[in-house]
Image 1 (tube, helix red, strand yellow):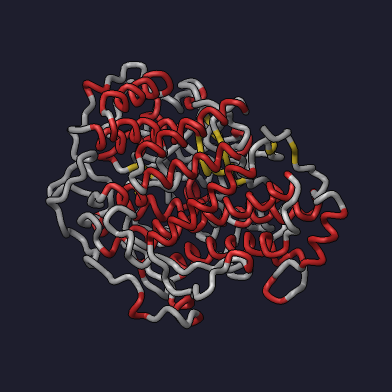
Image 2 (tube, helix red, strand yellow; image 1 turned 45 degrees about the vertical axis):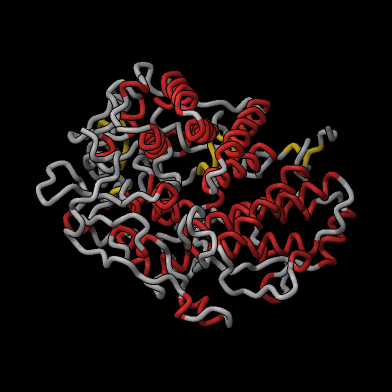
Length: 558
């Protein structure tokens, strides 16, 4: 085993800068001279570039910049919010203040719209940061340099994995379909490779190669904090990739490896008590169940930028927020919420139809000199709407705070247990069911029994657990595509339960073309190898009232 080595924290001044801020070279490239000098200074600048690459995907005004002031331009969490809304699990109100209405009505498939461009450019901008790092790194002859190289490769693999799932149907049955263009570092380029859409198989092969190298070279690496990947996170990514590829044995192996490595850092699933602490959960990298998270503190909020953060759009517990000050709360699909047992602590992550949750009883918030029970209008804060989420916390647990900052989970160890259960169950249902039952009974619902599950089969039950546990964290649409499920928001014209606004009540059949994102017009204009004819073709036109007969095996449970 390699010796333990740690990135120093000497480069504080450059930790949160973007790639473009490191130099005045055209297009923000980092020069070789800078990297050579960084090595002479004990890798200080190199560390700053590496941390900057990780920060890049979570910064405010992520793609369009501060001059545009867009309240939906906050990086990866914005993509997660759009994803959950597309999938039907995150419900938003029909309001002019709802910046994510384009995800509700699937207007985000328009090649000229801002939302889909953000979700494309965010990943490719980060890929460029990784390429800059890899282009200029000296020959990796020491464990430290190999670690920097591994971080660049792992982060780039994560980006391409996100993109291939958004812009192509799932690997199984679609390996030869066109996916996304590959922009690589100079030392990765293959003769004859262009920036045309590469096949799904090509992209996955590249991702797996990157992650394999990263896993090897991060052996013994001590990261400075959870905003940077380590070997456990890389194995977690390998588990995700293997799950999509339906390589069940590897998915189980890598998930278990991620669990074991995380345990060495003291990371374990959050207890029932820990996920009962409204305001103080799903908000900090310091939470003991987080493996990797975006770091976003008070100093990362731009001047007068409180309304343009993920907390403003997703959390329900701060002031200076679109949720609390315009009533644009993010709620769970009421059909999904109804499948959660009363004995399951997660049912309280959302208020019920009467806006009550046992987890917020006795809690107060304050605003403009007034106090009120949490969820009841106070000052200029709106009343909660039915099924509002209280899952995502608030800075320092201060209800009504004006600090709309907070870290965002990129990977939690609970996900690894769910991957392990599914991968085992695909090979041996009894074994997977036992893993699932033990996890849920121990950490979420002491009364849970797999034998008494509300769903009809193992796969639907694991999916139900994933939809509940990982709500709002960016997995919803990816899982629909991976499992080849329909997207279901309502169950007929006389559906008395759905909390989707009538204009957004429509369902889409499995693998419908409309579920895929479309490549932005700007990429088509700037990429000589991609034309409009090469773009994803639209499927069903989303409109109110279509496909009322579709069911997904989870939300139709009674």
